[in-house]
Structures are given as C-alpha cells and as structure tokens.
Length: 243
Image 1 (cartoon, rainbow, N blue to C red):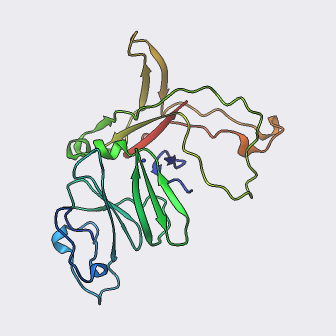
Image 2 (cartoon, rainbow, N blue to C red):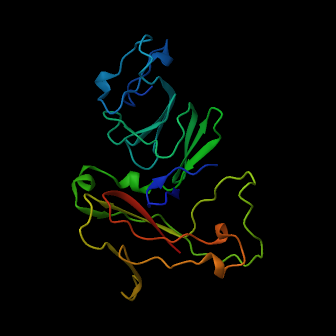
Image 3 (tube, helix red, strand yellow):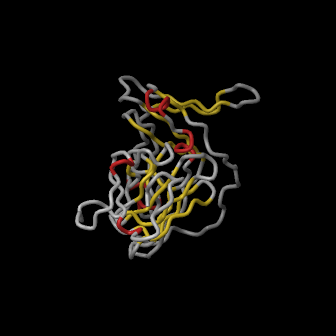
C-alpha cells in the first residue's frame, strides 16, 4: 500500500457507502453515514447525529479484485473486502480531514483532501490478496508486486534540506509484505531465492542487529544516511523493502 513507518507498518505517502450494487437515493446523498466497523444494515439517514461520519460519494471498486471497495468520508478512508457488507478504517497515518476525491491508479490509491494536500498509498497488492484465510493463518507471505531492477542513480545530486517543502518519493526496492497472526516468540526470517537456480540470494532475520552509525564518522548531515531496515516480529501486517 507506499511509505513504511519506522516500525515497518504500511502507511500513506504524503505528497455513500452502501453495498456497491445498491443505488444511492436520488435525494440527500450527503445524509448517508458510514459507521465503523458495523454492518451495512446499521447505515442510517440521520441529519441529527453529528458524531457519525457523513459518507461522501467517493466510492471506488478495485479493478483487479471484485468486491474490494474503498470509500472516502469527511474524516478518513475506509476499505471493504466483501462488497460493502463490512467496512474498516484505512486511516493509517492520514490526517483527520475531509476526503474530496479517491482514485485507484495501477497498484496505488491516491486521495485528495480538503486543505491537507494529497496522499498516496503505494502498492495495495496485499489488500487484493487479503481474505479470512490469511487473517486466521499464523503466518502468510504475500505475492510481491511486479518489480523492476534499474541502474543505481549515479548523479551527484544531494538530498533536499529538511526545511525545503517537498513530498515523498515512493520507496525504492522490492516491497515484500507478510502477515503474522501473533507476535513471534522466535526470530522471523526471510530468504530471497533465485527461482532459476534455487540458490539463496539474501537472508534476513528480525534478530539482525542494525549497523551502528556514528555521526562523527560522516561529514554530511545524518538525514542523508539511509535508515536501517529490519524485519518486524510483532503481530499484524508488515512491509520489508529489499534493495
């Protein structure tokens, strides 16, 4: 889905809601509410309950998985895996603001907000593969997104200063997503294998210790240094970037 948080969780990158086949009423569409995480039967028309989020008419179905729906409301973004029967929050690191538009572009979700810029959730292929079997499994490795290997940037340009207004680029490298039903008692390991030869190319472990970086060894600001990337052993969905 993307930028990853420091703990490896999937996050947005800074830069109506009935079942899909049920038409919206011709009048008062703004009075439909999207509760969370209740069933669609709990959706109600009620102008006098401001605590419920009013659902805007930004509903999109994923073009690659039937029944995978996304909806933008006055507060955040929701996702449904069962054609609108159940909804759950996809807020992640989004600010609480009105979602004015939502589009699915390739494998990414792009949302436009009211006064809080637009945000991108990179690589939603794990959402396309997620189901009840995955949720009940102790572990699951998602099929990765198609990734291309390109030549390293040999330009001599330098990172922008922190005070320079700028968005965030998509993460570099192959995005590898995995699910842990509960926190692992032992080390979580990941092997990259050459499909042609069967040889292990790289091996990673959550027990790997990040390389110690001494700021005194650098003559450049520390925000130029790539942060360490380690596997997470906590419960939930995680993303690891392999470069």
